[in-house]
Length: 305
Ligand SMILES: [Zn+2]
Image 1 (cartoon, rainbow, N blue to C red):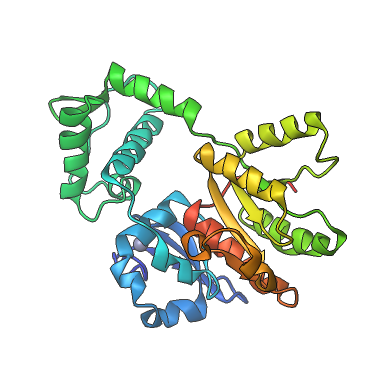
Image 2: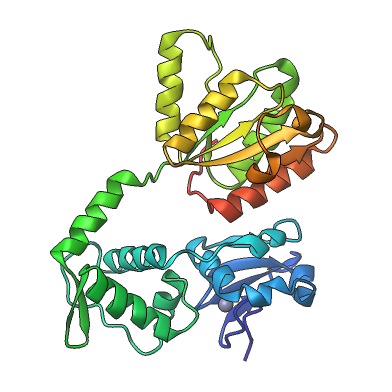
């Protein structure tokens, strides 16, 4: 019986397509993912995978089809464990999706329902039971129990309705940066390239920054986006303004800057963990961006250009 290299559960399906240097794995805990052959064989070189197993499996479950490579495996080190509230919310959303948002008494967690473990980022089944019975029933009244069945309560549906409007399913990434011809290649190759590779749509509004209509358009674009990439090269006031606006709306901002400009930035760079780039290593910048997006946001679903 084959063992999943990530969660070590047995009974997976593994394929190695001819002429390709990766394995395709179907695991009940981690869902479907691909892993580079040499990364897979040398997984012992990444001991943090062991410590982070629950988070990595759950991340893969949420980002089905993810391809683990030498370049992006480092970010598994940093995947944070979601809070109990966030995990309960993930579980509730999963249950609602499972019954197709219809009213049903069919939710019966069996003793080893792998999807419930994965959806709630749980280490073992006792954690799932706590989230269901302790948190979602006793604590929040979002679920009700009827024998062995769980059903979503009116309060639970109200809650799901409320987060539908507050949390964006947008696939747009707003890019705030200096508009200068020397920055074009950085944008096209590294920034837009990384956004496309992680399956999002890049949005940039660069015409007449002092025209009020354009400012409205910029603010609307930021409101609409899923997250922002803000590049501080050139130290432009507009970039600070846009990044501040995005943070105020609770959006994730990924901070980047050219190495040689970092000391000019008016932020404590340790606080914001800037990705520093070098004009002569565009691919390296792109890969770092892909890894950071994967680690902090997860993959999108956008398939256009
Ligand atoms: Zn697995």
